[in-house]
Image (cartoon, rainbow, N blue to C red; front, side, top):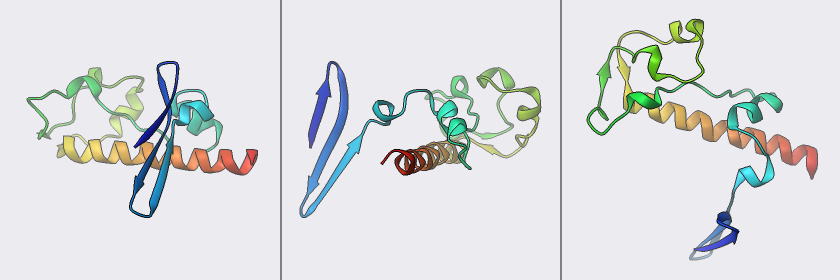
Length: 118
């Protein structure tokens, strides 16, 4: 693994394995801004979801039950909160869904960025 640094930030990491070579780039170096604004500015089909960051702790990683209180979500409207199902909320499932949409949304934005700039 070969990282490329600038100041105290990793710009890219190149991973070599047998005949394969993968280069990972820091997307923040290409497109400035938070993911939510990037997805909106590129009119992506995948938008940033909502996640109850302050709800998660080491004691409830396997939580299943009622959805967490609105106080655990950042920047969510009452209308958006009401769209989240009340029962059968599963922390593991919601975490994986949230992370998947982040990765897929960022991929879509980077692909659109590349089409417009290269």
